[in-house]
Image (cartoon, rainbow, N blue to C red):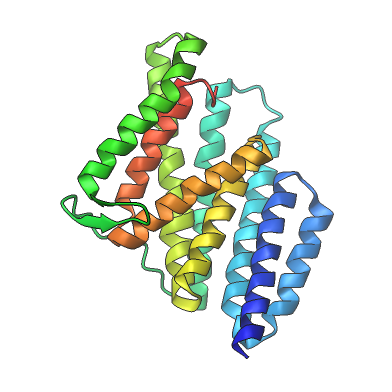
Length: 258
């Protein structure tokens, strides 16, 4: 019985991830097929919550994509269009929040303030959380610095404002979606490893929607896995948001976003 449950939850995870891909590429017929299959699975009460939350996310993602396609027809400056695109992630946050309210299911959101003096055990090392922040900042700076020097970007006031706005909005909303809501919900109904893997891969794949190449999205999934581990280890969403902001600043400064 356990084996059967695992097989069906794995199938739902695959459908969920395929749904993200086909919606990102605007393949609406395939998206509808994925939703139909998840609806069929939802009839089984053992999988109703899992199928429902996947459906809610995918429908919210479709709305997000359609609105962004509509916005793309207007002649906005590139910076404005990017900020609008990232701000509209609130659609997914709102959809997931409404779903939890209607289904009377709670999500933890990992809202506890972090203890920066906490020592956390990672698979490869044991380190104090505050020291890990320093490592993330230094390693991100070292990784992106060559690209920053090559691009020779003009650092103006408007560029700094864009960099800060993008990094704050994107990191906060993505972490709310993938770790604050989805991870905290899934760990209650499936194993922590299942929740971590699905949310990490889904996080990476959703970057397809903003034109990131598929292979690079898989690398972003590794970042999502790191953020998820930090959240589970610290029981707090804030360190992952800060780490995510640092990474986003590097992305913008190195010219990967503009």
